[in-house]
Amino acid sequence: MFHRPLILASTSPYRRELLGRLGLPFQVESPGVDETALPGEAPAARAARLAAAKAMAVALRHPGALVIGSDQVAALGDTVLDKPGNAERCRAQLATLSGKTASFHTACTLVGLESGVNLAHTDTTRVVARRLTPDEIARYVEHEQPFDCAGGFKVEALGIALFERVESQDPTALIGLPLIWLADALRRAGLAAP
Image (cartoon, rainbow, N blue to C red):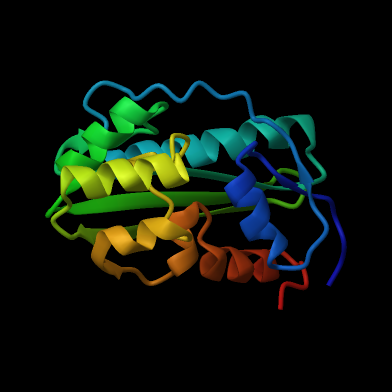
């Protein structure tokens, strides 16, 4: 195993916390990528495109580093569930999600320009929301204020109480970074990720 800088191309505190679980030293840098959806772009394709774009944007500035890019797009059928941004939109989004199943596509790309590393993965997690009353939604939103989270909830906190079940191969993917895949990708790239 050998050492090269590891950079997380994200300003997300959730991704930073998740990557910290692997016990590897890393830096964080904003990728500065336009995240606007392309016309007709499927949610999983959007997540994959943005994860790759974020990783590449930072890798071009640091060609000797390994760079992690990640993006998550949530969808209820064809409707994308973006970060609500405020309480009113969060309540509306959770009301729409009530009693339904949504898919969360979490893409991750690992790029090392000088080392020739270019690995990519998309994890799809399905969340089945229980039927939520307006009072339950209002209490949840007031308590947790998950305005910066795709779907309008934090599954790693009180948001777990909103669901009947979560179907996933990697529970960290729903939070924003698929660590099972990423740990393996980092090992393949030569880093000692236990």
